[in-house]
Image (cartoon, rainbow, N blue to C red; front, top):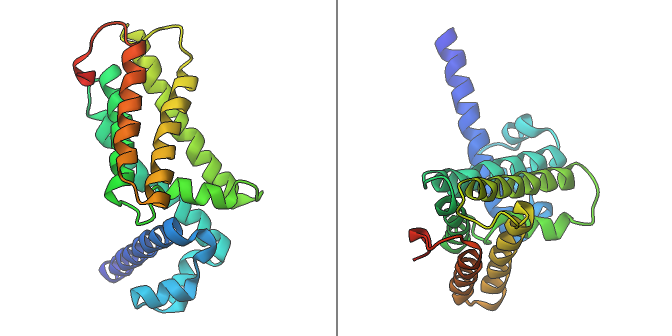
Length: 211
């Protein structure tokens, strides 16, 4: 009995993960309003009832999709950057992993959060709150990495970590927008060069990560 129940639970978890992965891919191109339980069921060849059982409403599906996209972002950007040595090297790695994540098509529409933020920035509610919370966590993490570089004496201590994180992230967002809208992938190279130039100007000494 236990093995059968465990098997059903495992299948249910696999179905939920597949639904959320497909939902995030769709939302990155068409927005969260483009999601429907019927469409996801058809795309994944599962029953509508099976999908509905995992979420219960479109809003629950949207919120779960944002959370799943945040986990995917962390896997693609935050975790690999954490492998770089603490300090300026990790600041550089965060920016470059962000650009690589957008450029490589982890989500077919570019950065998931750039896409859905534009859709929900003026629409109060649970979905907007979830998107905003994910963005705050990202910028807080970026600022903490900058602050660690300052504590190590590798970055100008007079710069506000939150301001620098915001500035570096803005370059990535601009690259994502321009590259997608204008079919110009060179925007990523310009953003990378601008990030490095800004960090060189703030570095307390030449650093191999910026060579």
